[in-house]
Image (tube, rainbow, N blue to C red; front, side, top):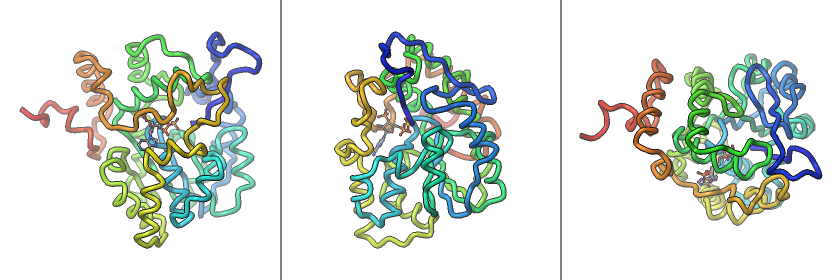
Length: 309
Ligand code: PPS
């Protein structure tokens, strides 16, 4: 996620954040403008050989950026270790990212958090590939909560309780997780669409990289695959300033309040949700995901008929 200070020369923690609103969805103001979002939606020309890394925030975006750029360089880590992740895979719907995307030689690697309905219209007629990564929404909300505390383009959450309510009602920046997932998963049977979960990446990174290579039509030998796995590990990424966000100045991201690569685990929600919050979450999840014909690794927890007796 791109993150910038709300305004120069001001004390970030006291600054109110005025989100940019496009099609009813709030976006952090620092990098986004109505113009950049509208351009991305209506005018951005998708090329047939583009590869898009698409996520709802905190679902594994930066992890997938590392994996895809390592695959692109056949496992050689030098690109990942010398060039910032946002330059390797520009955020084309933001002001700065758009410039980078337009001057990026084909085949491009591009990133965004856009929901399907405001993704570039030109995509509909293209064979560009989309990789959609999604994560247990309970872990998303926990990760997002800590991120908002550190990043000055986001309002400081009042409490976890309120933040969770805003997540469930779709009022956080970047909109509703449920609508994001439903919108993108409509593409699940298309040849140029690949979806994977954070949980699958955690469980079997090597197998996940092989599947990604197959989808991308990239032939990597065993050594190259191992190098992708090694260099995209949580430990390696924490040590790489090109993806750990450590280079961002303090008025953009306050590293004293936490780390961008925070825990990198599945199930941290269990340390944050009360029993009542978990029950409310499950009820709303089941309502909102009704009719979506896909089973996710976390679905077992949500359905009382499937949970262990
Ligand atoms: S953002 O701001 O939307 O771009 O954030 P995003 O990159 O989508 O998500 C950040 C979370 O992904 C975790 N992460 C990883 N987990 C495991 N292994 C690797 N290699 C890895 N890289 C990133 C990161 O730690 C954030 O999750 P939390 O739960 O906060 O730790």
